[in-house]
Amino acid sequence: MNRKAYIPALLGLLLFLVAACHEQYTPKPRGYFRISLPEHEYKGFDSTFPYSFEYPVYAVLNPDPFSPEETYWMNIDFPDFRGRIHLSYKEVDGNLVEYLEDSRQFVMKHIPKASAINDSLILNRDRNLYGLIYHIEGMGTASPCQFFITDSTKHFVRGALYFDVVPNNDSLAPVIEFLKKDIEHLLGTFSWK
Image (cartoon, rainbow, N blue to C red; front, side, top):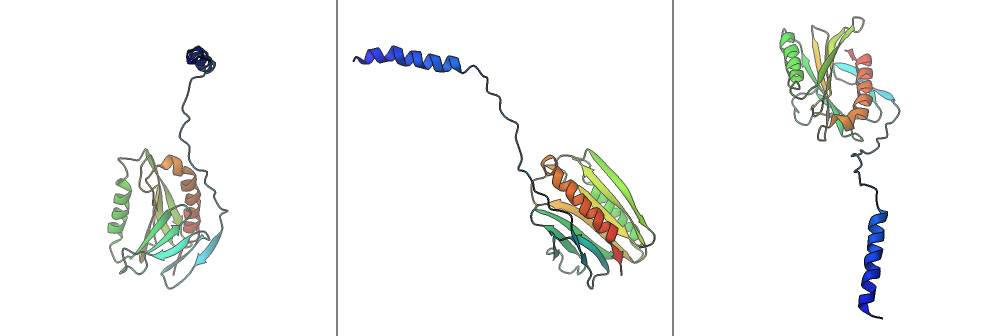
């Protein structure tokens, strides 16, 4: 058979395939991995530190590697989420106003990227706990949650939640909400020694 006889048949088949595909291509929105969240379960931290609290069983406590001279600073690491709560402790010696202002300044640094900064009062007279917790909303904010607590005379602790990933708080939202409950539990069980 002649090669020229195949050309019309091939063109006809090609036209049939092109005509049969009348659907327009629409790209799918970008998706994110499903994040499995464990059940909230806690254990106590009680050592020679001037404070104690309960923290999640899926977290690991580590000394702060960047400030070895600060013996009471620590990180609560969440390896499964690539997150960390950094805790820093200072003794109060007439300098409480300075620590409060430093905490406020750390939160205010988020204003350019934050869509909202909501604060909640921490007040527990029975355990001598006073402070604020800041929930920082918005795309690209480095820390979605920060807090400080003090007894106003001897102790001051500042905490901040960070992630070891590029901040995209839309995709991190389930993890942020999950860890906020852990922070609330930590603060609810926190006590001075």
